[in-house]
Length: 478
Image (cartoon, rainbow, N blue to C red):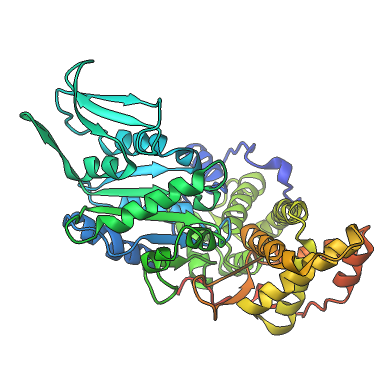
């Protein structure tokens, strides 16, 4: 019997096989790379969403028109949001310039404007004039002055606002015989849920306003926006203004609001088998079924499972060109260990946010009913906050504080991937996010040193076929 592959063996194999081949074995050992934002070897089950992004953003921008909507890709961590966004960007017309932005770029509007201009003008013919950046005194609230002038002397043009910087990139400049042609501009913001604190929200609000106004009558600037974030991202964006609802729309009615969930069974099989087949390695049908049962289509787990399969092949049967059930059995213990490690990381985040009580109450409801409404989610989060405060501080939370603390708990459940739902609708319903994470959290609480956590957890009945390990309807590839 094959020796089970344990996590400590990850990516340290050396293979000496004739059939797989010395060079090919090295490729196979690094074929699946489970890490944040790293593209999978096969982006399975996402063609529908790539088509939506192209329709909403690329087609109007390529024709020099502003898109009607911004695009938001949202889902639990590990569902491939960044990968989907990057794939969509790779498919863009070369005429469209892209500026990649992250949370640090939003520390002040001047910094954001500078990042956009630097990336949008890269590779373009800049006039003889020089772009001068001065990040000194605030100018029109941006903290930045950018001028186009002859040498170090007089400036013939000042860019004194974020909107002016975007207009400069999209429209270009024509002054005193010098010119720079504009180009359609697409701003790509990853981890948009992290754009908060230290004044970042106000800068984000300014950017969203600029994008909204770029399509107004008389402006018609070819500027688009695509964002990716965890399920709480939509609520964060809505806090910037009600106009965000019009920009992004409500899923699944609007193609610009993309709820990214797990893959279906067929796409899961494809994600495992297609990359290996390109290396002349066949995966038996039973192994593909085992991959589906072990991962339930969660993209991060699929990459972990694929990596464990490859390592099992190289350690136990380097001369084989077939991954069979015995190799899958050897890979499974190592995969399960990595999965538990992932659950623990997320569970500790819930604990740090003071949201374990809310998580247990929400899990109890979904195990019993299969899903819960937005109103029920808010109610259970408030109950969780009260239970936490009574147990820890022996004092009830004042009713006036319930809403605020309950919202924090709700955001934590969404951010960690315990649950997720279709954003933007009061009638939205929520389901479990990362497969089996809720089960892991309940089992942890059932043996906790804290009596109130044990009490809640021990009252939860986990069905034999729990809804979290069944095919979810939310964002699953069609």
